[in-house]
Image (cartoon, rainbow, N blue to C red):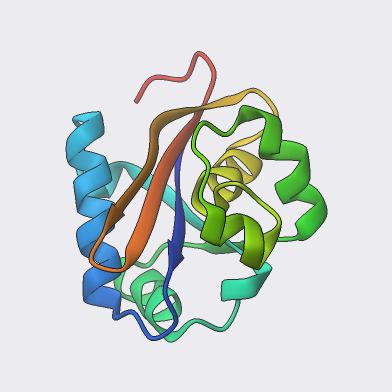
Length: 129
């Protein structure tokens, strides 16, 4: 299972967030259809663009609580000062993806920034893409 962790600036459109998702999928060499779930942090629980994208893609959207984000933190790879100041996580998109993909998951694409959004892809260790 591949999980896309998403973050964005407030008011970012679903289209822009999808472009970030597409860029991450291209980096991983997979189609967006290979994504099994979307994930984000509590701070983006009501973000219209993320909610709309989940609906458009018919994917479950997991809202990751702060405790799960902190538990995934040691497996993140990038540091965003903005994310740290807003969420306490060095990368909301990476931590959210890792938390939902499971305890043995690893990043297959670290946080990518595009169009005002971030996307990271995580997969359970040993699982085929």
